Amino acid sequence: MARGAAAGGRPPGVVEPGLRVKGTGGGRTVAVTLDACPGRFDPRIADVLVAKGIPVTIFVTAIWMRWNPDGLAYFLARPDIFTLENHGARHLPPVLGDALVYGLAPAGTVEAIRAEVLDGAAAVAKATGRQPRWYRGAAGLYSPAAIPVIEALGFKVAGYSLNADQGASLPPEMVARRLEAAEDGDVTEGHINQPRRVSGAGIAAGLVALRAAGVRFVGLDEAMAG
Image (tube, rainbow, N blue to C red; front, side, top):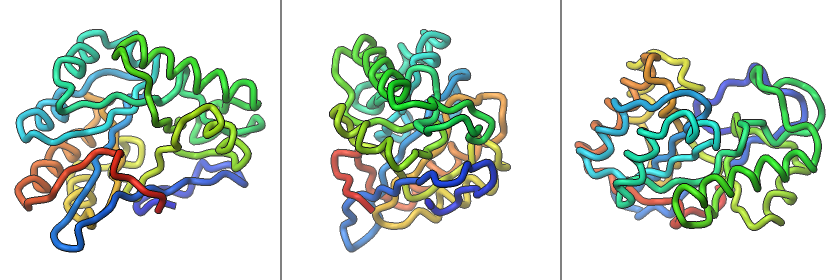
């Protein structure tokens, strides 16, 4: 389980893959990732990323892109900052069975998992003109049997090592502290789809602090299993 992850709301038997990037051994190297689950666009975070020149991987759902054409245009206008990857079509966790995952209905079957991944990838490709290489399931949890299915479709599973905001549920001070404490090689996870929640202010403040601390920011192309 990633640092900072909550244990409640997890059906039995699911896994939470980790992911780290190659550190330098001196200073800190961090990969920032954010999820655009169904919701809206949070300019508090996006504007900081642009102003501070911090590259980020955004895992977008097809639903989010449909609901937020202006936010999508913002991302597409700065490919030097924003890399869009696959968070699924309908935000269905890649979990087998019918147990809710943090309140979300799971995909439930192998066929539905394939559809969730492939339809999400098609939406990203249509928006960006490039095929996504990474997939992160809704809630970041997977049935063990789902992972080889996803990999057989040609996608790398995007885990993380530091959960910054627990689904945009934490107070901003706590979120900022979690991000500020990122270690060399961490892949951080947070949310950019909840502009009305206070957690987003903590993401923005934590990113500013990391930049001020001289952190080196990289993309997931430098990732390795952790």
